[in-house]
Amino acid sequence: MAVKDVLPYLLDSSFLRRCTRASSCFFVSSLVLVLLLVQFDLIPQINMQQQVRDFQKQVSGYIHKLKTTTSSSTPPLASMSEEVDQSTSSLPPSARQQPLSTSESGSTSSSTTSSLLTPPTSHSSTMQSTGRVAICLVGGARAFELTGPTIKKYLLEAIPNSDVFLHCPLDKDSYKLSLLMDTPNLVHVRIFSPEHIPENNVLHDVLTAANSPNGIQGLLQYFKLVEGCLDMINQYQLQYNFTYEWVVRTRVDGYWNDFFPSFKKRNSAAYTVPVGSEFGGLNDRLGVGSWETTKVALARLSLIPTLHVSGARGCNSERSFKDQLMVMKIPSKKSGFPFCILSHRRYGFPPGYSGVPVLSITSKGNMNGAKCRPCTPASRGASAKAILKMLRNGWGWPGDIKDPELCNAAGPWESNWESIFDSVAGSEIAKIRKDTVSQNLSACVRTFESWRVHVMNWDAPDPETLCEKGLGESG
Ligand SMILES: *[C@@H]1O[C@H](CO)[C@@H](O)[C@H](O)[C@H]1NC(C)=O
Ligand SMILES: *[C@@H]1O[C@H](CO)[C@@H](O)[C@H](O)[C@H]1NC(C)=O
Image 1 (tube, rainbow, N blue to C red):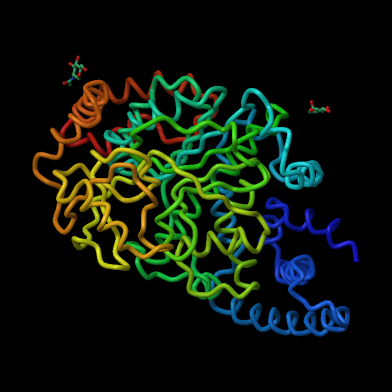
Image 2 (spheres, rainbow, N blue to C red; image 1 turned 90 degrees about the vertical axis):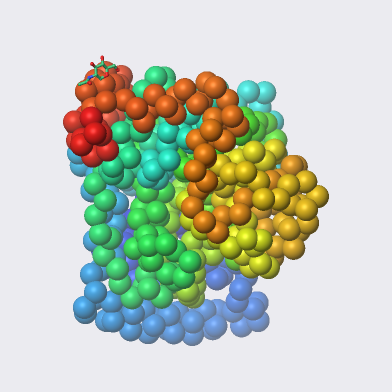
């Protein structure tokens, strides 16, 4: 059985995405599952063919049951993927001319799979200079006047040969994105009005609402933002007939305190994520990989049916991410990254064994995407290290941090957080922060007007809409 030859075609994410639109998805999923089990050697060698046949029967019975339960009352998965795809229809014609998921692109990408995934000493990791890099930023711009200037300095402007893709929901903070105005390598901006994502039994089985501030819907919205990167990047690659060597995906609420690490020693066969903050799975606040591994890692929504078939149940975001890579046979690697996620959420202090630490942005070294805020540290030095050492490994433990300082995050941000922030981030970033939030409506509109003509793919509401939501009343 030439499983190895068939599998890449089935696992190609664009194929899966198309498949979720048709009702035949369930049969495809069952086929994928059987092939995966064979490929993974999960089925004992003895009398394998008979077992595969038995298993196939079981799976199709199960799939049939699943199909009847999901198609009766709940919206089908098809509407979910339509939602992901829908925004592409408003793209400029030039960008849309290239079909997104033709069989052509499917076959070319899977033909490169083997060359990218097999050799440990892949050509990319031994090359002198880095090839082209795509950086995809996702999320709400809530504290972007604080995180944006650091993302710009340490990430967007620091990675040579990079293009930036921005995928954000439209809200009252969207106007803050104006601070990216003079970022020369921004090639696609997509700001969309969030819509409810239909939920169904499959999603409710695979995901849990526990510890997600906005429940399962919140998770789905996040997954959709992440998966949107694939469409945007793929479209650009097809438009210019090339493939990025690396794709970096992270969030707009990241506060960076140092430059993005070099790609030189990265292994392109593995998907790299930050160490720590794993919450029972893998840290999903940043990821670095080749286009081939990225296609799997970012397919957070469209792989849920596959996860369901594989038996994943009650997963949080981190767990479903880990399972997703495992099921699709993408190895993961953990590494240090100099950023934290700026958060207003409150957590008890000191954190208990399964608690969440909140770092002060005054900490030194890689914070690996742990939660943080500007604060007067409640604990620093040896005592802060001792508190972190007590945390559950594989859960809230944030990795080894060179010089950690901890906040007591039981209450709201301190009243003088702005001056704390400014003194840590430096005067250059402090000025951008102040200018961003103090601009008036007409200045904001003018900024977006002149910005959008320079971005190749501008896929966002008009400048008035972007600015009025946040600056309308006061401006
Ligand atoms: C795209 O690039 C490949 C080589 O990288 C070339 O063989 C192919 O003809 C190109 N396709 C188009 C449409 O230019
Ligand atoms: C808005 O700010 C600009 C300077 O950034 C200023 O020239 C302009 O007069 C202001 N407009 C209003 C309506 O306040």
